Length: 294
Image 1 (tube, rainbow, N blue to C red):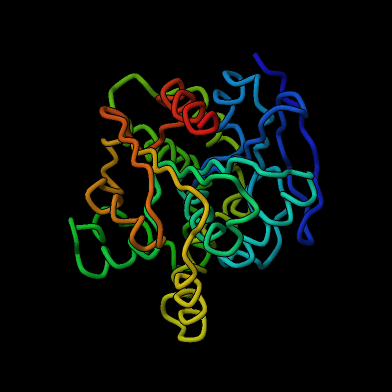
Image 2: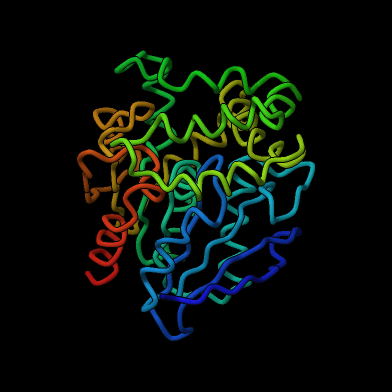
């Protein structure tokens, strides 16, 4: 089992908490967590892969890292990843991503493919694919992610989710998306949810949704985002998919490679839900080992 150390790393004008495991000379993996998770969602992977050098930051605005007032747009978030790679001295890493970390990963690869050896995305549709599916009602996508519009309301979501009832609802948002009953690490879910004690603890994560929504409705921001999609991803891409994900259906998500401008490696995990890292980490480690040894 790998020992995990914790660092404070200055990058892109803020400070990130980064969990690090494995020997310095080992193959490198940079892990980007989803919403509303944190670095610890990769703990099982880190413990099962002592042969790799794994870096797992808390992303901008999440507990453990800085809470800046701004910078939650996808361009700054991808700049964060670039700055972390440079600050940590990472070269030729596998970029391992999930959920919102996956969205950042897709966009990072459009901007900075040469900085990574491969992109692995776990249960996150390419942003362009997801938006198109929502607008066209493909597979009822807009109804599968009903929290996006309520999150546009200022202050109220942060206040509610850090009340006792709100944290119970947040915990339920994990367990209801379990692929098979009893497979999710509920103690780890409780640890994640307990980090959100005050509205400011979850303000940054909710801002990810607000800023992305604004990038769709404000013309200048929309043009910048869609101009980015014109640059194809040139690094190899693997898409690992928990097939019981009700929010992000596989029938939509498998089309992500078209919008990424590249061919990809599709790896379905039958019987697994959205939070693969919290309920099927052994299968996830098998997939990681398969791609970094390729």
